[in-house]
Length: 269
Image 1 (cartoon, rainbow, N blue to C red):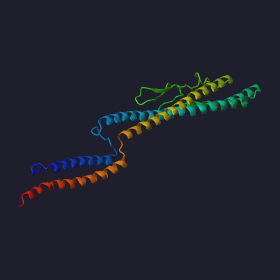
Image 2 (cartoon, one colour):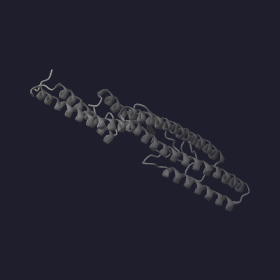
Image 3 (cartoon, rainbow, N blue to C red):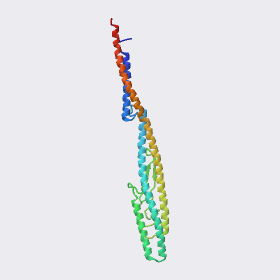
């Protein structure tokens, strides 16, 4: 049926043209933003999942920062205990020389060795006081501990105890006076080596945890990309097709709008 009041062909062509124009706008937005799901209106379920994953990603980033800070603090303690262990070994050699000098009644040599031992002692004390990172010292007489985030929500941490290396303590049994003994030096060497092993184990554990957290961070980041990122190569191809469809839709609408004119032919003589 031909009618000048209702042009069915034109209405159909117009609907197709409007639908294609909306699709064209969507493609242009994807190219501009790089996202196929850039807002809750695009895909509510996918966007909600992506937002939750972004929260996990932010938590993992905080965990990595925490692990980095803890690693530096522990590594400072490792370097300090290694240096102190080396100095104590030097002190053992000087102590042996001091004992020899004392047995031979060589007071001048004994005094010289004692002064060297005092210098080593002061050097160890200096190392202990300077083994500080960001206000944390794991080997002085305080009680600082290291606690690193082990997951994205902070519910799990990796904690490491403080090791008191101050003179006259449980680890370095040498005192601040100059009354040195071989037994105290040997005990101090063993204890410091144990503390060094403690911090070495802590450093390795933090390293393993960071490797895992980094891999997990990358997996979550890639997962978010798979959910919301646009395939730009395919989007570019779809855009060209949509542009062609729009041109064809305009042509089809023009043809449909010409259809009522054919009614005039029915009234020509």
